[in-house]
Length: 140
Image (cartoon, rainbow, N blue to C red; front, side, top):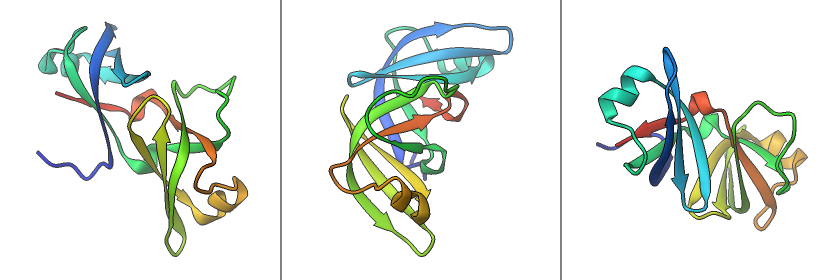
């Protein structure tokens, strides 16, 4: 199956914390850990358990960017992936920022050109890719 979501990071499930309706799945991707909020039905249907290979899927529009490489305190978004801007592609209003993650792999974010300018995002700049756990899908 092919997906339109740009961000597809292969990894291994580290933990599954079960809840009444949803669970929290952590997937080790390179040196990073990505947290996903997944329904218990999906966890069971996919057979998610520690050690299982899985792919983390995130749409580029769900990835926020912060300038710099220091984790932000006081933020509810569970996933803050440090990297370096590898490429900035501008469109008429929005652009794509490609981060080469320090832990391995890449992450693409769709952001406004105004944000690219305000954050001074350019090739070689340190940045964080930030994703809420509820915006992370897990595929097997």
